[in-house]
Amino acid sequence: MSAIVDCTGQKSSECLKHGAANPVERAFKPGHRWKVLGLGVAANASFSATFAGIPATAVVLRQGYHLGNAELGLALGLLGLGVALSELPWGLLTDRWGDRRVLLTGLGATAAWLFVMAMLVVPTRTDIPGVTLLSASLLVTGLLGGSVNGSSGRAIMGWFRENERGFAMSIRQTAVPLGGGLGALVLPSLALSSGFAAVFGLLAAASALSALFAWRWLHEQPAAGEGHVASAAVAGPAPLRNVEVWRIATAIGLLCFPQVAVLTFASVFLHDFAGLGTAAISASLAAVQIGAMVMRVWSGRFTDRNGNRRQFLRSCSALSALAFSVLWLLVLAGPVLPGGQVVFPLVLIVAGISVSAWHGVAYTELATLAGVGHVGTALSLANSFVFIGFFLVPVAIPGLLHLWSWPGVWLAAAICALGAWPVFLRPARTPAAKPPQFETTTLSRLTKPDRSR
Image (cartoon, rainbow, N blue to C red; front, side, top):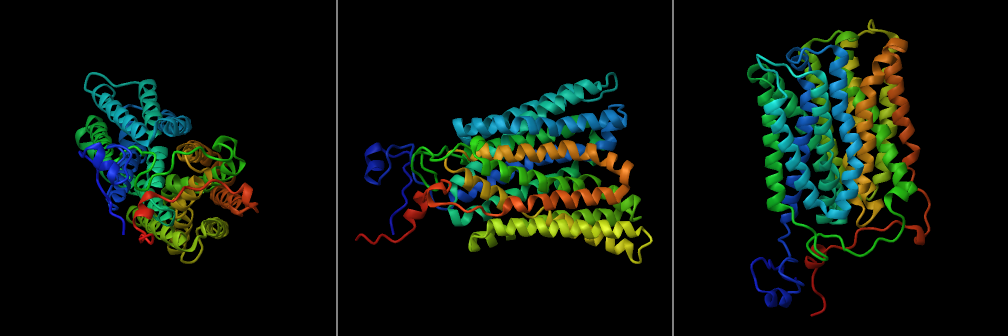
């Protein structure tokens, strides 16, 4: 087996002796890719804690900043809109600058901005910031935080082999419910006890810590290195001119609409319609998040081993549409349904897990389809659709409730899930039309037996 040599600190002649072009282009130990994955999880969890944790403080936020419900909705909606607007520009910049520079810049700027908010945009005894200042500050937070997804995803796609990427990306995607859950658990009580200066300060510290991990472990990809994609030009259209990339990104956005409906209004549904108490509602939502995390990790490993990402994504779309359709029919029967307090949360949990289990697999398929050098752009395009959903769905659901009550909400969720199903049908391709794939990594070559001796 060929040796893996770390050329850090060695002379150029020694590095050349072991096949490295210069001291910077060094080979890392195989386990280093797990550090890259770890910082990807940390980066996504830190921003998820910000994006999902701040809305979790909504009651305290409304009271502390003296907001009405409309003003509160505007401020929180602009946080999601900021991410939606900035995802694609950050992704294009990632493919031009590289994942290390963008991730360090984005995380560092997010940490600095949250620290500024902790100093200047918090209620005090003498001054309460207006809704305009708060909304603008949250919009900037979203604009800066949009840097995380594309850059961390590009790094993971580069450091892992083809038969590991689905598993690695799925682990990274568990950071979203993990960070959001931690934020929802910690931040409301922190806001009550210590105020929003402590909330924004803690979130700033989390982003700064993630930036430190990125500086320490995320090295820019050389022309050939462990797990790195080659620097050769990509054959085929760029992502923004690739119809298939747009189709997959749109399907990802469609599947996120019903997921956002569960995340934002499931507690209201279970309380107002099913008549559940706080403990039962919390347990149901926790089951959705835990189930989503487990399924994301399992689905990545399952599809890596079987090479069936499109088939799995179609199955998730169909199962989600079926689960929401069942929920729609049960709701039509009314809250007097026998055993409704058990049936409603169980069906909602199944629907919530089904519509949340596919993220890592879908992002891996999209990045592989985009090809070498375009990962950041492709992932950010998909996330733009995702965060448009986070902006539009909470605005649309009150209108649906007014017109058609809860049956209209869950029927719309089923239609969105079903709409993604045909997109994941693998189109017939000739060999010439096959999308560019990631090249065999140096790590995989180094770990294969050397048969030339």
